[in-house]
Image 1 (cartoon, rainbow, N blue to C red):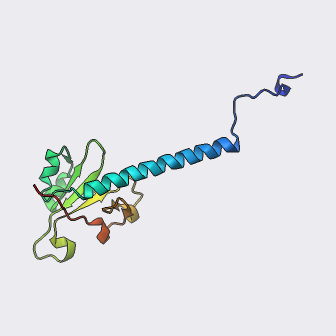
Image 2 (image 1 turned 90 degrees about the vertical axis):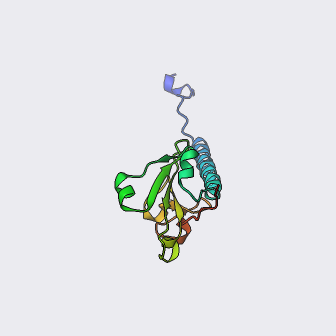
Length: 141
């Protein structure tokens, strides 16, 4: 009998069952990561401070590009523990809508473009310039 006819497995299974299990495990892992991100963002959105400098005292880093800092009312912060970034836009007196209100945007770490650039207060992806991307601060010390 030839060794290839011995009925012994060569160790490479590749069965449909194994592939299906791997696919399901990967999908579950991705779902868990998405849920963790949503939970974190919900908590974050409810605790963003009126004064963005308070983020610094909470351990966040100001990563605002120097050109942005010099030419806008916006500041970008990053939580070094999570990698999550938020942008604070200072409202301009006399401006209508969100332009006249202090607000934040939470950048989507999994963004693929303008259509899912930010996260809303519930951690769901939303496009740039959408009203749901604007998060009004709720915390003040």
